[in-house]
Length: 192
Image 1 (cartoon, rainbow, N blue to C red):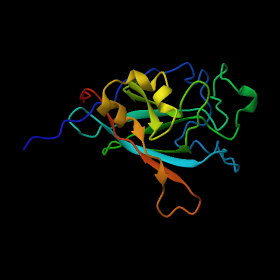
Image 2 (cartoon, rainbow, N blue to C red):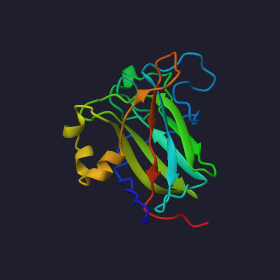
Image 3 (cartoon, rainbow, N blue to C red):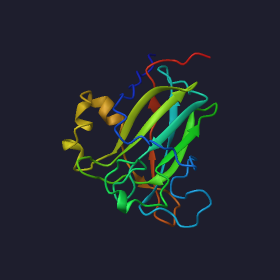
């Protein structure tokens, strides 16, 4: 039997809003900053998955970074739009180091649109300090996807589907939290 070929996660632009000054808090919980008690505004969403090599094997010690705009469309960047409306309770950037199973998890907010972009979350995978992949994920079925200039650059249907995620209700959540699963497939096998 032949193994099903994995769809490589497409490379995409880092965009202009990778944090130009990293926040003091860079953990994987983006809705609470440091030891704060006030959560970020927005629909709470858990983004999780695995980092896999081209053969489907988990990648250990991959540093996964995500960054995204807050509920007002503002990034943690000095040149962001809507800076005056930035949610100070939203971390906007987080990191997670994968273990032996390649798993990562982030608690964040469901992304929102801002002009001219459809809702999205940026993701970078670093191995031994080198950025190996920069990509973005999108909300399945969002009406702005079809007109988004970055989303439209993904011509391969399977690749486009691989970065288009369903944000479904989290089973057992009393707070209405959402969950999205995203396995990220690198186009190579990292060395030792």
